[in-house]
Image 1 (cartoon, one colour):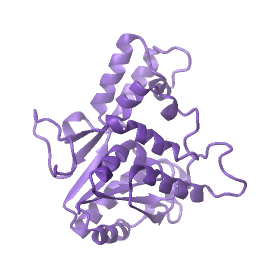
Image 2: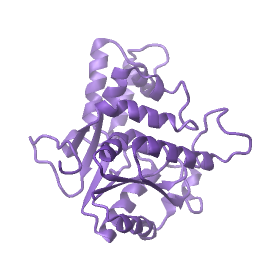
Image 3: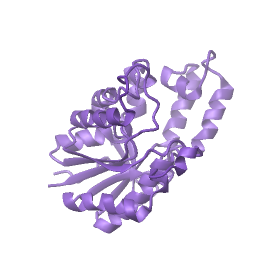
Image 4: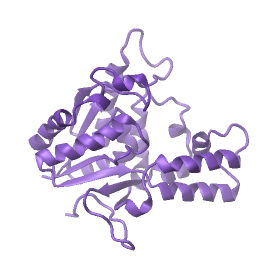
Length: 283
């Protein structure tokens, strides 16, 4: 049996970048395993969600199991590290934070799971963690080392297609309209066509994802975006009812999350070649 292991930094990360691939794999009879590095202790809880005295980390673990069930995941494991917070925060250096973990020690924990599962496929993040989050960067470093230790043959770095989002932005700008999701990203208050905000956002894309030329796989999961949204809903401590994730119109949601992008480690795509559209061979 083929086994796919998806390695993520925090509870809820699995929904956004690999939720469609996980669900498709499960439906195809592939065993899907979710490994989460931290318990997401540094997250900002949605007001009113936690019971009095309820630790955020306990809720986030239970939400991970609920999301995993929706996506067809058969096993969930936590490596036990502490959420490091955003880059530059003092929490980066806190005891047991994932950012300060010894890479070989952390990789050893993941490698033991890869061996137990005889995993053929591992997903991690790109070398900048998608957008520079310290725990995401560590997922990349630890994941590569663990795959080396365990002999996992195929490693895919989930990323965001920088050029795709630039094209989306240009399209909306030309039309003179910004959908609610993009408006939130641009932090536009009243003027939906604020050129300054758009230019600032475009400049920030240098730290966002990877250029299209580096991407090897574009997996169309448009038929599964409803399931991805349902899995996001399981993470109520982080995603409020009025969150832009949940209030996006269906077309905008499909444009943003209907394709999952990957870079296969060590297997570059030749210039002019089409993207591959699956992480495993067709049976």
